[in-house]
Length: 330
Image (cartoon, rainbow, N blue to C red; front, top):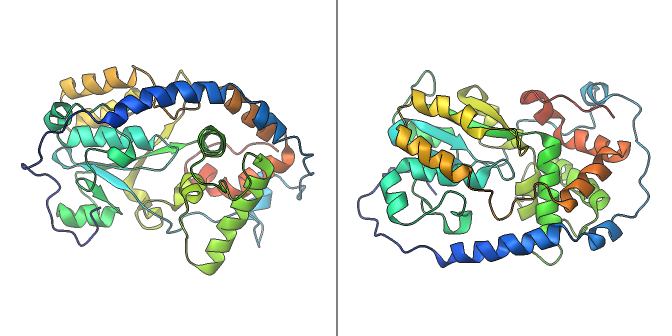
C-alpha cells in the first residue's frame, strides 16, 4: 500500500493481462450458500434468547452523550485509513468496511484505468479485497499521502475526496449479521460471543474504551468492521476535505444519483458512467445481507431493546452527529 512517503507511480504500463480470477466462480457458490444461511435462522434465534437488561441511564441520547464525563465513545480518533484514488479524474474515496467499501474499491480501480480493468475481465461486484486488481496501485493510508504524491495543496485544490457514510444502526446490523452469523472467519469470532448480540455489543463497546484509554488500536477483524466511521481516514485532521455521501441499502436509494454529478464534474466519460450503472444494477455483492430473515431478526431485537439501543448510541453517537443522522429515540 502506498503511504505518505511513497514516490512510486500509481499507474504503470507493464501490468500483464490476467485471466478472470477463479475466485469469481466461487462467489456464485458463496452467494447461494449465504442466502440459505441468512434465511435459516433457528440457531441465531436460540443464541439470542437471553433476557435483556434495563437501560443504565434515564437520559435522552443527546443528554447522555453531552454530559461530563460522557459514557459515549468520542469521535475523530486516529484508528485507520484506506484511501483509493482515480488520479486522472482527481478523485479519491475513503473506504470503510460495511459502508460500501467493496464496491467503492472496485469502482475506483475501474476509474484508475477503465481499459485495463475490463481487459483483465474484472467485474465491479466481484473484485473483492483479497484479489483486487488495483492492490497497492492506487492506495494510500491518508489524504496527506495523496496530496504529497500528486503535488496538490491540502486546500484549496481541484480534487474531490468522497466518503460514503452509513446510518450507524444499519451499518452495525449489517456487520453483525455478516461477520457474526453469515460467515465468521475465526474460531472465537465476534469477541468470543459467537452469535449473541448482547454479548458482542457489550464487549465491543468495552474494546473501544479500552483501546482509547491505552492510546493504541489492535485493529482486529471485528474492530475494522464495527469501530466508528468517524475514526477513519484521519478525519480528525482532514474532515473539511471530504464530501460525505450518505449510503443506504434500501431499494429506493440510488448511489449513482449521488456519485454521478461529482464524477461528471471531474470529466468521467459517459461510457464509464454507463458501465458503472449497469454493473451496480446487476445485483449485490456475494456478502450482502439485505432483505434476509437474519437481518430482520437482529434489527428487530436491537430496536426493541432500550438497553441495546443505549449501547449503540454510546458506541456511535459522534457518527450520528458528525454525519447528520438523526439520533434514535430510546
